[in-house]
Length: 505
Ligand SMILES: Cc1cc2nc3c(=O)[nH]c(=O)nc-3n(C[C@H](O)[C@H](O)[C@H](O)COP(=O)(O)OP(=O)(O)OC[C@H]3O[C@@H](n4cnc5c(N)ncnc54)[C@H](O)[C@@H]3O)c2cc1C
Image (cartoon, rainbow, N blue to C red; front, top):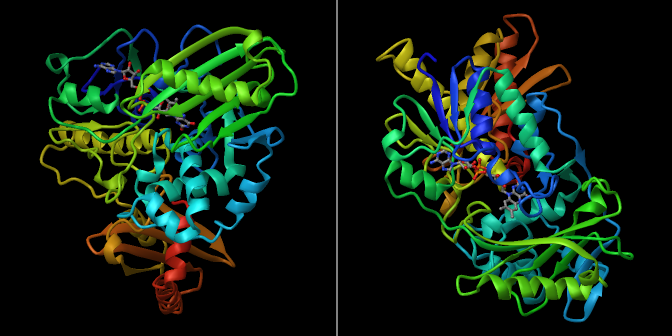
């Protein structure tokens, strides 16, 4: 292959990077250490359809949006709301009290970066509700003490998970079907996937290379320090013969834990998942601290099953457990955001992608966002080497892209306004999806309106494009007036919050 882009690792990040690079016309070689691409998105070979622990996607997140924009069809299933149970110190019941308590958390408040979630939530919602919220955050952080993490990190994800629960989906057939679809697309676009090809620092190829492994493996390969806090998570998967009227989801929020033990009955969402439509699959996870070993962690999960799922033990036909370290993505401690994690550009045309690097999103969305960003950088590096050595690099920031679009629309205007961020400088907005051009574009009442948000040293800059199809010479002043009005509206704090909630594609 002529000067390919090399991708080390064939997980979600590596496959997304390979497809993005191949679709941009570059030759691509994926080096995958194991005998099958997919990484953590594969659940193991023992039972088809069983993920490595419970896995969901969000329809407004980077992964689903990227799949849709590439017309990669993957079946998605909605949640089964009936059968959700909360297990607290008084027993297992419908989550009525908890829902009523949480309903009062609906006011959309932005949480500070520097405080712990626990300290902030106690102030904002009172100690009882805060304790419940800290535990529930174990669902998406996989952490043994989510209340100790940055308030911004937890609250952004809390809102997406609990207030946007209508966007949660399960991948039909398990994540291995998603992996198969990605592999098929990568091969169809001409990417080469070399299996059983574990690279070492000595065999790392020349030329633009995307290292899409876990952070610890990337550190070894690039021979530098790359680390960020993660989690220790115990998993228990159980297949049983059919039982009684079992719950679909159990959130164990008993007070002996600072987190929650989550149990999902995957076959409630997809009864035919195991190919035997009457067998049941339970997948449970529990964040555990550094001093807790595998056996007591699994015993604690089994205790939750005993209390919430009658008669499961007698019906077990298969089970497996894991204790995973740093496998469920990055967690941000107080005082940090995703921007503080190890950067994608590691210099010398080496780029890192994965779920623990400096990219926004939740879990695998971080892997997708970083993979797309790393690929754009690698493509740029390849262009410099192959076509125009010494050519200045092109700034492809969303703001610039919007400017290019404005230049193509006769009479369009472009205005920018700075939003000052106070103590949260440069951290105002966490975009969920960075895989598209990075700006919002809409047409309303015949007016084309575009908005891009760019982090700046003092906060963030909002750039707005306006284009009204009026004949010249009326068009330019009208467009300008329209754009200035919009820019001043964006300066208000209400808009700042609304922007934070909007997804930039
Ligand atoms: C229990 C659990 C639950 C989760 N739940 C969710 C969820 O609900 N929603 C969600 O979006 N995400 C979830 N995730 C996270 C999601 O699985 C990961 O973010 C995603 O799979 C990471 O993909 P990746 O490509 O970054 O890394 P990986 O999947 O780890 O891929 C890295 C690849 O690199 C290869 N490799 C390593 N070293 C080398 C080397 N030297 N040479 C060549 N190849 C190498 C590995 O074999 C591997 O295939 C969950 C994860 C876990 C563990």
